[in-house]
Every structure is written in C-alpha cells, then in structure tokens.
Length: 161
Image 1: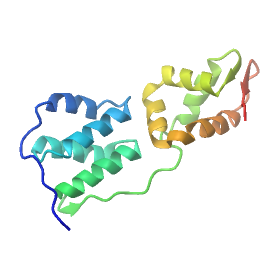
Image 2: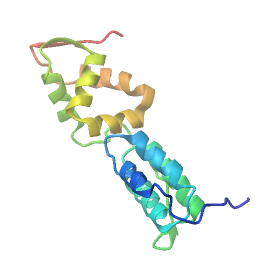
Image 3: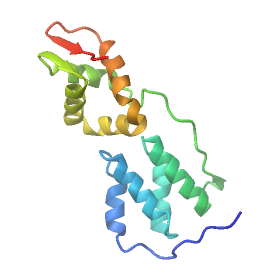
C-alpha cells in the first residue's frame, strides 16, 4: 500500500473551512470541508477531521472524516478511530415531536413536498441531518412517518403513493 502525500501546511482558507465544518444546518458544507482538509496534514485539519469523524450526525460526513483520519493515522488515546455502523432512522430522539409539530402547522390538505418545505423551514438542522443521512429515501420515510403520526382532525395528508 503506497502512502498518500499531503500538503504540510495550513490551508489559506482555514477560517472558511472551520465555519463550514461547524455548520449544523448544511451537511454538504461539512463534507466539502472534510474533502478539502484531507489534503492538508496540519494540526488544524487533524482537529476538524477528528471532531467530524467522532461527532457528526450525518453518516456520509462521519465516513469521509473517518477515511481522512485513517489516512492521517489519527488516534484517540493511542487507538485508531473506529467507524461504527450507520444509525437507523431515529437520528434525533425528539423526531416524532418535531414531525407532529410540523404536521400540526398545516390546516387542510398537504402533500409530502409541502411537508418537507415546512419541516425544513421549522427545523433546518434536523431536516438537514435526515436529508443527509437518507438521501433519496427521505420522501418515502417521511410519508410512512407522517402517516403513522397520531391523527389530527383538521389536516389531511395526501400520500400520492
């Protein structure tokens, strides 16, 4: 296995990359920051990559940061990082409460696109986490989740199956 070569200095845009890496409402920015930082072998890059590998809520970001940490041979307490299994659907413990709140904000009929837009508007961080984690499966998961919420009399979810 050939060892990857890295740039041995701090990226010129490190402040921008730091901001991207902590933007909890945009998983794509966090992933972009990992993809750029993994080219630079410096303390700042290693710190940001480590935090994302250990704590990001979106598995795609965790996985990319984990791969970068492996390439840098970063350890925690002398042991290499461990990439755990992808979490199942309940990424946020209060997701049912959040979805009920979004659903209750409607009067009358609404469809999945209406629901997604309102969810995004009301709780961007949680929406972004689920959208980043589920990708193309988000619509189907939301349809099932909304359909199984406790009923509310003045709203009607149109499934459009």
